[in-house]
Image (cartoon, rainbow, N blue to C red; front, side):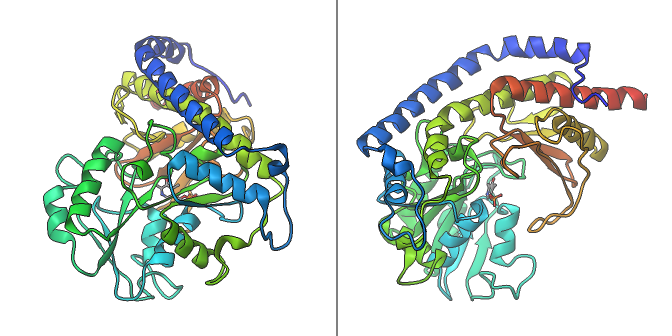
Length: 421
Ligand SMILES: *Cc1c(COP(=O)(O)O)cnc(C)c1O
């Protein structure tokens, strides 16, 4: 079985696409250069040394490597505090620490962008309860629809914020939806609107997939608290496990108290065996994110040329690494995802099929031939089998690999459509 079989017709379209995206490619390089400098300066200002790269053990009291890494995060994200741990198991876990750590019975959580990412909807209690969801704890949730342009609507926000509204959650990336991502210039306007309604409201940002795509981060433009996954952008493709929370000191402490126990918080938890990779992955992240972005822009252009719709379009402004493509039919999604999987360095010989996933409402087909299980800064494609049959593609450890994988997926799709007659 041949796994990487690129159709001449697709290669030709790919060459054209490559030409057409050149200006955008150099803009991405420019942001990457800026962010690399920012990260490098944070390492230097924190005086990271060889002995910080060593693992700890036991309770991890005064663990030097762990504490230093959190200082580096504070410097990069311009925050008072950080909780950056290999023992946080995912982005969802990091976000749960923020929600359960800060919200109390009677409080209300508000989303101003419509529905939340699937796993958050589950933990809030929108699907089923009894397992300790926010709803079980007496924390209520409300969402307001975005405006006609897909962005949060300032007027609706002003009407929606009530005395019991303790926290507003903002999602930077599109997640599994076709609404636009919330780029930082827009996010800043929305944060100002929210803040003008209620000075002490907590503004939390789900920063998953957003780190290092723009020159600024949400905590630099007024967000109080922010969380993400180390298997995504800040891991640089190297960190095997972990998540982070950064923000105002008091809020990060509350999240940390939920992570371990009140009174203990982030004081415990040794640096894991892979602590060196937590530094090295962060250091590499701006470069790897830039490669993933270049792959995404190429993907958008190539699939547009094949007659499909890409969100964002290849030349639209980006604030996350997700590229969605509307492929119109379940069979097209399956062919495309199987082509991504077949192009992978790991498990290229297996063919993914749709299956139910914990925390998600519909069956999902997931292609990911990754070195780190489920890591989505590595090339991966997910598609919930529901209208409008969109696939969400992200990552790629190098721009060349990202392009090879997408050319292969497009070739799988091309052959499926051709054989169907
Ligand atoms: C990935 C993601 C999450 C959850 O992260 P996991 O690591 O998959 O648990 C939450 N929100 C958004 C927008 C994401 O993309």
